[in-house]
Image (cartoon, rainbow, N blue to C red):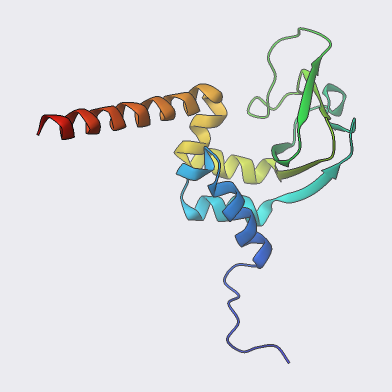
Length: 153
């Protein structure tokens, strides 16, 4: 018999994925609803050393990947025009596992939902690392101002 008072609002794996995501930008700035959407649609996959994760030969990009554990190495063999999931085009970089690697990924439909509904996620997807550097600079400035304010009072 199943326990009658079990919490079934979110499966354990969804909660675990949300906990992991909260530890990293841009997910640390996202609403729980958006984190849950990512977690509920995420697939966890293992890649052994040198396995191809994503390749220009795969055609139009259909999944968004997050490295949960391990490393991915990018290899460029040509310098064609910029391509991306947002532009619904193939990637120009071959992405290969460097050592044992686990990736979380979501399909295009879930990506589009997050992209349209979550400003932190959309900002990260459009501006990449520069959006994260902006956040770090804002935190440093805030701490500096707080420090100056407390020493002057």
